[in-house]
Amino acid sequence: MNKKKLLIILSVSITLLVILYFSFRSKSGEEVITCKVQKGSIEVKVHTSGQLESEKSENILLPSVLSSQNVRVYEIKITDLIEEGSVVDSGQYIATLDHKVIEEVLTTARLELEAAMVVIEDAKLDSNLNLSNYRDLITNSQSDVEERKIVLAESVYESPSVIKKAQMDLSKAERKLEQDIKGLTMRQRQLNSQMERRNLDFRLKQKRVDDLLKLYDALIIKAPKPGMVIYARDRFGIKIQVGSVLTPWSPIIATLPDMTKMISETYINEIDIAKIKVGQKVTLSIDAFPDKELKGEVISVANIGQPMPKSDSKVFLVNIRVFGSDPDLKPAMTTGNLIQTGVYNDKLYVPSEAVFETDSTRFVYLTKNKIVKQLVDTGEENEDYMIINKGVKEGDVLLLSEPEKTEDIETIGWDIYEEQLARQKKQKNEGDRIERPDSSKNKNRGTN
Image 1 (cartoon, rainbow, N blue to C red):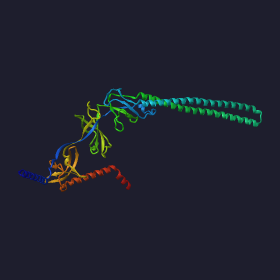
Image 2 (tube, one colour):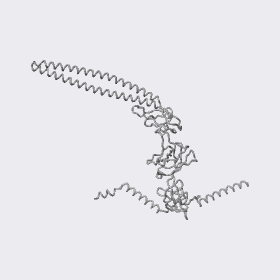
Image 3 (cartoon, rainbow, N blue to C red):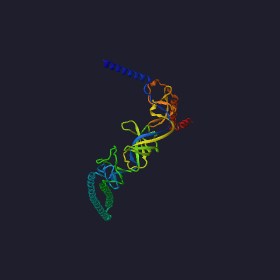
Image 4 (tube, helix red, strand yellow):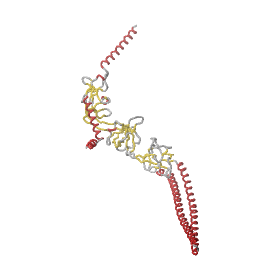
C-alpha cells in the first residue's frame, strides 16, 4: 500500500512540474538569442568551388589531311589510346586511328582513278578518229573545189547559162570547204574541252589517292611537344576514349597542358556576379591537399550567363589565375575559391541572421525598453555579416530570431524606407535619361 501511495505522489509531482514548466515558458516566452551591432572593418568575400585547368595547352589533333575535300572521310574511330595522365616527350606515341576505314576508301579511290585513266585513253582514241574524219572531209572538199575551178575555166566558150552554173558550183564547193575547216576547228575545241575535263577529273582522283595515302601514313598520332596527356571531351562532355568517333569538325583527341600556368574555372550565380571584377584577389584551397593554400586573381568574367541544369538560375563563368606553380597540381582537381570583392572600413555590421526582409523592406528586431521592428538600409554582405548603412548604432542589441506575435510589434524607421524609394526613383529616372539622351532635343526640334 505504501508503494502505491508513493507512486501516486510521484506521478502528481511530475505532472505539476510539467504544468509549471510550460506555464513559466508561456509567461516568459522562448529563449531569446541576441547580438550586438559592431563597428569596424568587414571583408566581403564570395566563396565558390572550381576546377583546375591549364591556362595554355597544346591540342593533339586528327591529321590535317583528313579535312581535305578530296578525302571525303567524315568520321574515324580511335582504336588505341595512351593512358590519360601519361607524361610524354615530343614525337612519342599517343594514339592509333582506324586503318580499316582508310583502306576501304583507298581501294575505292584507286578503282575510280583507274576508271578515269581508261576514260582518258578512250577519249584520246575517239578524238583521233573524229579529227581524222574531219580531215578527210576537208581533203575531199578541197579536191571538189579544184575540180569546179577546172570546169569553170573550160566553160569559157560555153553559153552564159553554163558559165553561170559552173560559177555557182564553184561557190558552193568553196563554202563547203570553209564550213568543213570551221567544223574541224570547232570539233578540235570541243574535244580539247572534253579532254581537259577528263584530265581534271583524273587529277582530282589522283589527288584523292595521294591524300588518302598521306592520311594512312598519319594514322599513328604522336605528341607535338612534351607534356602530360589529358583526354579531350566531345560535344556532349564525354571524355574521348578507345572507340570514340572523331570528325574533322571536332578533331581534338587530347591536350598537353602547360602545368606551370594553371587557372581555376568556376561559375558564379547571378546574385553575386555583380560583385566580381577582373583583378580581385583570390585565396584558393585544393580538395586533394587540404593543407595547401594558394593565391590568385580573377582574370576574366563572362558577359553572358548560362542556365544551371534543372534550374531557372543563371551562372557566369569566371577564370582565376593561380600564382606560381606547384608540381602537385593536376588538371580537373577541385578547388575552393575565396574571392575578395571588397574591404570596408569603419562600418556598422551585424550577423546576417539578424536581418529579416519582406518583398520591399529589410528590418531588424531592436531591443530597447521593448522590442521594435526597425527598418534598416543595408549594404554589402559576406557569408556571415551584413553592413548596415542606416537604422542602428554601435552597441544596439538585436534579436537573431523572430519573436512571437510579430503583428503586435511596432515598426519604426519609415523615413529610411522613404529614402530608399526616392533613391530607387532617382536611379530609374537617370537610367531613362541614359536610354533616351536626345529625347528633349527631338521634342524641341519638333516645336520650332
